[in-house]
Length: 133
Image 1 (cartoon, one colour):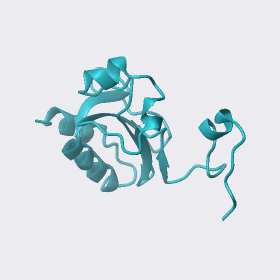
Image 2 (cartoon, helix red, strand yellow):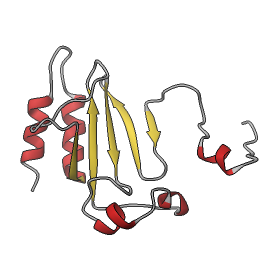
Image 3 (cartoon, helix red, strand yellow):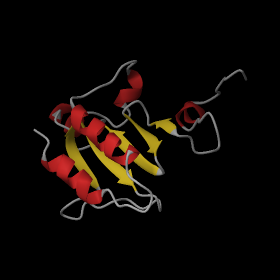
Image 4 (spheres, helix red, strand yellow):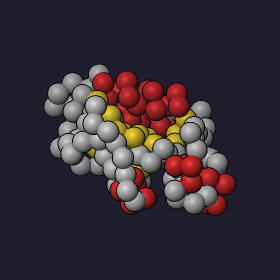
């Protein structure tokens, strides 16, 4: 493997291990994205995201997660792109849904994984969000 040495902080912050899209991608230690059955889901839980931890959401610097080896919260913000790479719209017209629990994210992933070609999972995904306890 190539020796990874950086000269400036900017080189570290902009560094990627590849110039192509991958099926899994992490986002500055506060979220990740993954491809599922030609959909893409983004699960974010850092500063500024719609999460239950108000201190992280409102009072934590945007780059704070990079200072920690482990970073976490109890809920996340979710964005899903459809098979045409367009964000799906949730009831109410938003493209993100917040305060999503981990069990709900798992159900959403299952819904995307089992969605047949040519089908739109938006109605089912909205039902999953509405059923979140």
